[in-house]
Image (cartoon, rainbow, N blue to C red; front, top):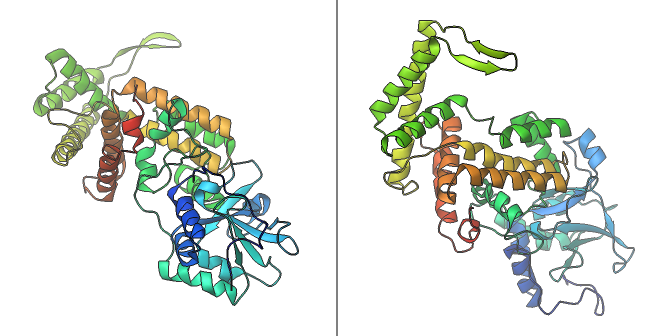
Length: 418
């Protein structure tokens, strides 16, 4: 039984200096070069294997799989099932979408009417042809059964071909590196397919209520304007920034709490504000409501200081430093949202790229360094999700922060923040 290329004389020539897009394609190429098919299948089994699906049918019945088969004149009859590893996926197109599964799935779902050959990364130096019918499929499927279903691994991964490594787009993509490294996705993959078209749509619908281009635009604009974070968080942090500026840097927590109470009581008496209709004065706020607001803000100040203390203990926040803003929480998610929208085809590549660049520029205006940006993002994430449990919402980001601040290939060490 043989795997790999078709008969001699066929198959693409290997470029003398081919650069594999990711470590997955490198491992496939090296295994193929030494005809180590066990290693080739092991690599496929550990990673997602993508395949094209019908977008119209996936939209109508997302719970079903609607495979698009291909044609290759090198194979008898021409019919093939083309599959791809992450680094070899075609750039996103409006009507061409992909899903993924583990290697064994292809053997399980194969039917006699399906193509007799699966082509891995067609046309590339790491291309291989796998007989898709039993008993041949059992040979490569068993590697997947041993490896288990592919799951994401927290690690720094970089797309070396077809993706930016420097410049404004790379800078904007690096703003979402905390989440992408956590999920083991290439941090700089602008041409994003992510979890596959059906999963990207499901995630945006369930988590964000996004089901259309217009809804994606609205969420993207709100994130870029940093309107999604809690306004009370920014009030508390902004007040501390003002105190620090007026009194030379150090801010006593008790003084911060007292200052918050004074400001809120003064506001409760009514404020003079400028509106589109002119200058007006707001109505006084009932005392009970004011005291409840004060209590809430003072509780928030306690939460912030405890998170900062933990970050200092974990080496994430420098001693005698504090977090100036949680704008990073919105701006990091804005960079994410751009790629999520592209993966779900709620926007095109140009729209996504423009949003990513804007996220990077806004981050550079709000923060001084990747370090500052990171702690702002982590605090925002924890205030949103963690509730002082210091669980995975916090611990996962600490792990990723350390990776991005230390590994030589990190964008945070290779792309200037400003």
